[in-house]
Length: 85
Image (cartoon, rainbow, N blue to C red; front, top):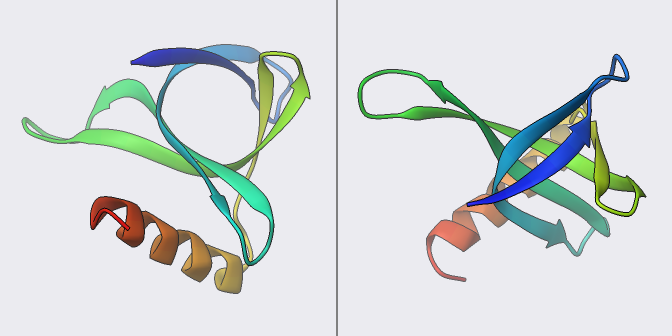
């Protein structure tokens, strides 16, 4: 799995696993699915979904998804990815 460096909201840098990245064309924004290697239970890992902006080459800043209509579009895009669309 590819590692990327992200800048957290508090300004700290963190290396995480990039699970997937995608663009939602309707709103022309890029999103990522990330993992920090945290387990939810014995069979599932915790993942994070966020809008991502490349601050400098190879360094990414996450932006929380607070707008419900954007979150709905992101969930639809993720469903399409899982279904192979």
